[in-house]
Image: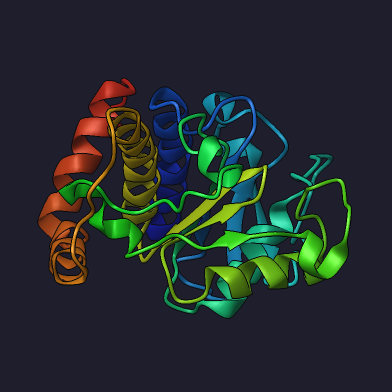
Length: 239
C-alpha cells in the first residue's frame, strides 16, 4: 500500500471516530472515502459501529458495490448507497449516511430544513427529502440495492445533503473533512432551527449569504481548523 493511500485510510478511521464522538453517527451509520488513486473505487467499513472502526475493517468496493476482497468481513447492507453517489457525482470524495437525532424530526414533519446560522450555509438553500415509496412502495427502508441507491443519488442531485423520509440523511463533500463538516453542521442547524421554531418562528439565510458563506467555509483554511478541532475532541493526534 502506497503512503498516500495509507494516510487516507487512517483519516477515514478517524472520521468514523469523529462522527461517533460528535453524535452524528451512533451504533449505525457510516462514512466512505473515494480511493485517492482509483476514482472508480471507494472504501467503507465492514458492518461495525463507527466508534469501533479500525483499518482492518475497511473494505474496497467498485462503483457497482462489488467488493475487491472481503476476507470474511460482512459489508454494511447500505454500502451500495455510497457506491452510487460516487458513480453519479465524480467530484464527491466522501459520503456520510447518518441518523442524527436532531435531524430526524425534519424527515417526519413537513417543515423543510433550511440554514438558520452561518455555519450551516454548507447545506444549501433547502435540503430535499427522498421518499422511497414514490418509486418502490413499502420497503424495509434501507438503501440496499442499486435501483434504490440510484434513486437516492438522483434526489441528492448536485447538492451537499438529502433527507431520507422517516430514516435519516446523507451528506457529501469534495473531501473527507468537507463531508464531516456538512454532517456536523446539519446536526447543529436542525437543533437550532427546532429551537427557533419553538420560540415562535425561524428566519433563514438569504441565497446570497448561503452561496458566499458556504464557499468560504468549505475552503482549505476553515476545513483544516475544524478538522484539527474534531480530531482533538475525539482524542486523536495521529494514527
